[in-house]
Length: 357
Image 1 (cartoon, rainbow, N blue to C red):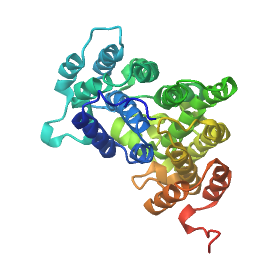
Image 2: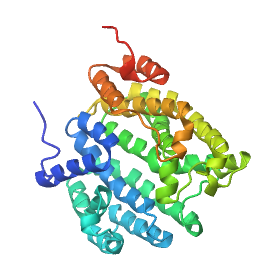
Image 3: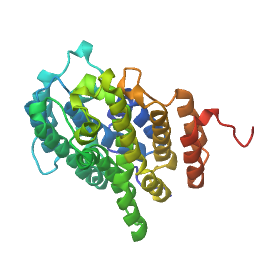
């Protein structure tokens, strides 16, 4: 006999809007939400949108760093259940930095709708909110710290490997903990829970380091951020502001390769996480296996064309390969992951023969 509906108190129209918003702001995360089932898809959807508000503010190059940090601190207070700061107060503070409504993209529409997102989140069950809130607050606080740290530079300038991993933890390792908090609610074997928490951050770091590797051009040209460590670039004779200099491409390419090597060092732990993640409350293996496998494919593409991430052309996995991975995982279990990982690392998944060929 089914129990009570955990989403019974969530206004359907607001929940539908949140699901549509995720589709608009992130193709990758939309894939995850699409293959989750209720209620987990709505839990993850709301958790992601809470994070996306902060991420958009942190990436906004038109907002002075001091104002960015202040906005993030206000937003942290909004998410803090023990603070009386309201989402409407945050909306009032951020309003002057919002693009005109006619020019507003999906990311800024989400920021402008922070009161609606927070209000919808607050209708979720208490144990769900308690699972989501600490990692979101840790992410927001970490982003504010980084903005303040590099306020005089006008954009983030990562110094070394340690700081790169620290940033990636705040940006994505916290999300790994958020997911784990949700899927370990209730009874769970202690050893399994320990394994999940030991590898959750690595799962997030893998995905974020893939983004760092592939988004060098956009990060610098659009947001004035350089995540390739200054220490590594200096070893190749480059300053961080020369990262896109065509005359220094060989050195920058070498650092891109080094960053992808760091990302690959997290693949095994991320794979372990997938082998242990519980499939409960609508959680599915496909939801997390797909981004893992697409990360493997992206690392392959960056390995083969590292110079492209330093130009406008960029690097990405083709839509055909994305579709093939999603379709294949929809009917496979955990035992298929090692072979899928190996196949995707060697070449585009959709171009490889199957057992039926």
